[in-house]
Length: 96
Image (cartoon, rainbow, N blue to C red):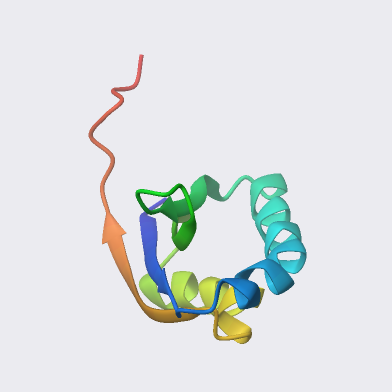
């Protein structure tokens, strides 16, 4: 199944991220339970503060990936200032 990456940068409002983090983590846990989540974690600055997100998931199409990301509470609550959703191909680590 194809992989799609969300690369998102937060608005300059760290409280917004923290307020909606429990709902976001619940959304991520469901993707993980469904076996669709490959990677998910915050982008951090030099002070180890969360400033964005990097999420990689499996989806049948770019449209399905965008719809899945659109359902994330961080997207719904406009935590992100800007973001991209793009297809990626895994090269490493190599399958063993």
